[in-house]
Amino acid sequence: MYRAAYGPLTKLMLRKRFMFNKMDQIAFDKTMFELRRFLEDHVKCATPDMGMMEALNASVGHQVMAEITWRADKTDPEIMHANVGRTAPVL
Image (cartoon, rainbow, N blue to C red):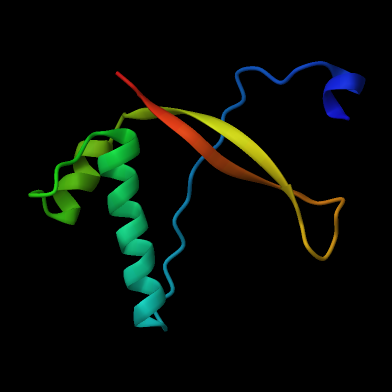
């Protein structure tokens, strides 16, 4: 729909955010795991032997190219959410 009306999207910049729930330890640990995996597998700036602060410091200035997929909100299909698909580090 968007492409037909306005043309293709190119050079779109998005930020990936990790939201930590300090009230729920299981949710906090899950987000910490996802952040660690993102730094190691997608950004490729960290190794498993690094501490979390060292890995975060190593990520400063790094970028990732990502395929963005769009998902309609369950409660309001007019609202679209951007999800990160395949990634590649920008070296």
